[in-house]
Length: 101
Image 1 (cartoon, helix red, strand yellow):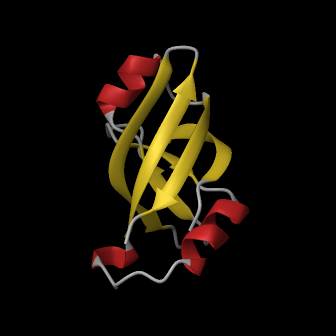
Image 2 (cartoon, one colour):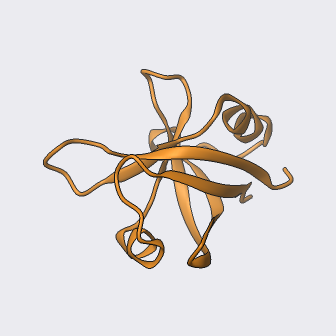
Image 3 (cartoon, helix red, strand yellow):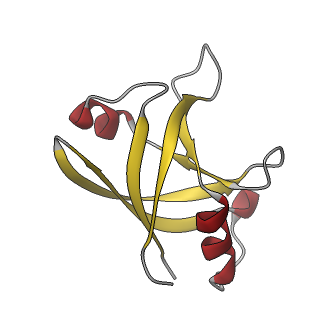
């Protein structure tokens, strides 16, 4: 899969939790599903993600997880990345995603 670019809103998983995610767009979810990957725990898929903002670019590796409610994948955004880009709940993030084999 080539790089897939999209914008998504950062949200907190639970009001009392420190987990933050972005829901992949329908197009990004379709792109992830097109890529043949070995089955992993919870249906996760390994990805490399780049966040671009006024603070620059940060690239990291993580996994996206299927969300039963939306039918899309959820991308966790680490605290260090949020801090480096000064983003918080409700902010829109410009992201590029590549599925890793």
